[in-house]
Amino acid sequence: MVNQSGQSSTSRSHPYRRQDSGRSGGRESLLATRGEWEAAKCRICFDPPLNAVSLICTSFHTGCRVFMCWTCFKKFKTENTEMTCPRCSGQVTDYSVNFVAQAHLNNTKIRFCKYRYCLFLGIYRHLKRHVKKEHGGRWLWPRPAISAEALYEEWKELQKHKDVRRG
Image 1: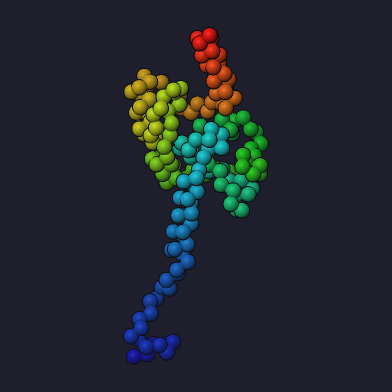
Image 2 (image 1 turned 60 degrees about the vertical axis):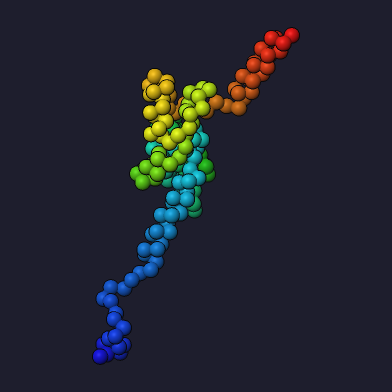
């Protein structure tokens, strides 16, 4: 039997064309996004973003992707009346919250305990439990990272005390 287009009916044609680019393209873009999530660091505190927010700047269409922690973003927004992108210095026009990205970053990224001299590492949920148990529930999140200069000054101070005890 031959159909209207002259093809044999043994090779069944489907009334809806399968669009290869639609499905695989969406999946590839999702994987690319997941790849971006793996490399994501907050541009303010340089930790993996907690409850990540993605900034949409004027260079977004050219590939500028900036993730920030929600708390760092709120502070960044209140301190800067005219927000510029911390990566490309373009004008920030909007921000987006991707809940899938937030869940991925919160549940897979290893974080350090912010208490000084505490060596605990874990995902956000475990870190929160650790802080409640080990540090009396006082939550210091997020605390700015100690600068290299402050660590160097502390090291010099320790060296002085070490020399005094020796001599």
